[in-house]
Image: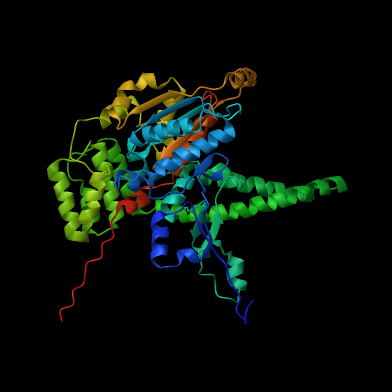
Length: 511
C-alpha cells in the first residue's frame, strides 16, 4: 500500500478454453500485459447425472455443418481420451457420420502422440458408439412426449435447471394469509435423479404421469396415516425415523403435480395437438409431397417462425427433400410474411441439411427396415422405445439397439443410405489387462451383469432419446447398460434457433 493506493492483481481465466481472438483483442486494447496470469479452465465433459455427461457446446451443430469449424470435434476427441485415461481403453469403437469419423481419426492421432503409453486400467466400458446428429435430423425436430422432454420443449431446461411461473407453487393458504405481494420472479428447480420421484417420472410418456403421481400420493397419505396406528415407543420411533424422507417425497409430489399441471395446459391446447397431428401425419408419409395446409395456415396466422420452419424441415426429411415448386412456395410465403431478412435463415437450413430439394427415396426404406413407426404403442406400459414419441422410434436409438443385438451387419443397407461413413475399430488392450478383463467378464456374466456402452452424440441429444436409451437398459433381454455423452442437449426449437440469422433491417435517415 503506497499513499493510500492498494495494488490489485488481476487474473483472467477462460472457461472452457482460451480464445486466440480474445487474447489478440486484449493486446490491441493494451490491457493483456496487466494480468498477473492468463489461464484456461477446460471443463470437458460435465456430469449432469449418473448416466449423462455434456460438454454444453450449444453451437456445435452450427459450427460443424454451417461454418465448417470442427473445433468442437477436437474437444470431443480430447474428452474421450480423458475418459479412457480414467476408465481404461474402450475395446470396440463404432461410429456413423462425417464428424464421428473425424473424432475417431483425432483420437487415433492423439494416441500416437502419447507414444504408446496406455492407461494401465482394466477397461470398464465395453463399447463406444459415436453418432453424428446429421445421421438422424428428424428426431430432434419432433415434439418430445416424455415428461422431461415436454418440460424442456415448453420451459427450456438449461444445465439441469428449469425456471417456472411462480404462482403455481404458492398454496391457497399462503395466498390467503400472505400480506406480501405474490412472487413474480420465476421459480428455479434442479431436475435430476437425486429427486426420487423425478427419477421415476422423467422418462415416462406424459400420458402415464398422472396415474403415477396419483398412486404416489395415495401411498404417501397411507404412510403418514401409520402414525395413528403406532402404539408402542418402538413403533413411534420407527415412524419418526421415516418422517424426513416422507416429508421430502410429499414436497416433491407437490412440485411435480404443479409442473404436470403447467405442462398439461400446453398439451391440451388445440395449438399443440394440431401441430402434433401434423407431425405424425408427416412421419407416416401422408401427403408429404405437396404444400401442407396446416403449415400454410400457421404462416397465415404468423405463428412463431421457428415452429413453421420446424414443420417444413420435418416435411423435407420425411419426403427426402421437397419438390422445387413446394420449396419455392414455402420460401416465398415466409419471406412475404416474416420479412426478407429470413432468406439467410432459409439458406442456412439448406446448407446444414434440414431443407433440401427432392432426391431418391430413402426415408421410406429406413422407416420400414428400422421399424421407426410403431402402431398402437402402449404409453402406460411400453414394450418399445417408440413410446417416447407416441409411435415414432428415434432412428439414433434404433441404431444403438441394433448394434447391441443382432449387430450392424444386419442393417448394412440402411447404414449405406444414411449420410457419412461407418466406423468400426478395435483398440488393442494390453495382454495383462485383457486376461484380467476376461476373468472379470466371466464372473460378471455368471452374476448376470450387463455390458456397458458409451453413446456419444455429436451435435446434441434430446431428452426423449435419453429416455429411450434408459428404457433399453432396463429391459431384461437387453444385455446392455448405456451411458450418454453429448456436445449439448437439444430440442427442435433450440436447434432451429441456432441456425436462424437475426438480421435487423437498416433504418435509413431520410435527412
